[in-house]
Length: 348
Image 1 (spheres, rainbow, N blue to C red):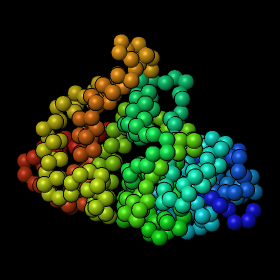
Image 2: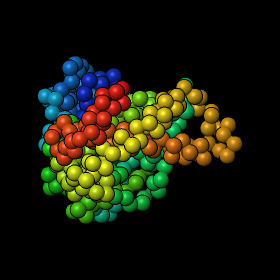
Image 3: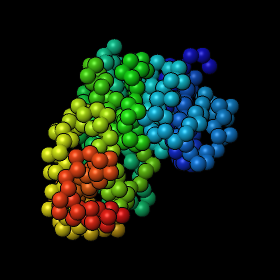
Image 4: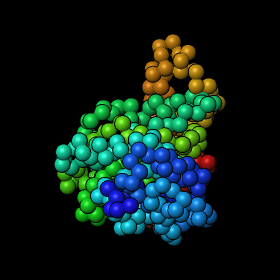
């Protein structure tokens, strides 16, 4: 193989079986010979490196064995090794359709030189025993908000999800690649896209580039994710305050943290009541949506709206906890003591 046009970058950590399925999907691509795969192993305890040998696959596969450096630095190491002019970022648990790489190349050709990143469609896996919560995740904006996107439309940096995104390699390098001051996970993709947007780049939606996301959320796992997002938002503020303000609409100053602290205390009772109901949603069958009198989409909207207070409460718990842990913006007083007791038991 000569110089590849595309370098696919896959960060991974302790998820060999999912990664193997992703590589198997890439081995069936329609444009074999035009891309390479770089797996950035972020300090896995065990990874079957022998099974990643390039000789075992119909495309070049390189494995970078790294210390546990975090997702942004791991992807940076892969970018430094990449030979393609186009970078495609995917997760280690997303399984591309056979024309996935071909479609990202088609999107780049169709751009006609415009400074566009291309977001492909990431579908959630169709679970045979799907429950109500599975349907909510797939059909709403609780994680991603594909349901609001239009093909070929342009969007801002908040849509640059690295589960399925192609970007010009030189543009990424010129922007300084991923910010290594961020936390070990979350926000690295949006923060880079924010800096690229300041250089004129936008995100264009190209739904023909399809992957399937093999990641099943439970209500508890979803709440843990929101809590971690809150914690990592503090790292985002310290690494790029402008990006934080663009995402959350305000600076992370003492006033913001005090507001979050008060919200947590004031809404504790209602959040606990909501959490009890929320945790039952994966015990209800998916066909609850089809039997709803006004239609499934109406029930999805109703339930998503109903959980927002809990979502915000959980996120703000994480944010205040991390701000306190790092010694930033401490509020003190009785409210902080009450909050500390609540945080000890709120998040499973």
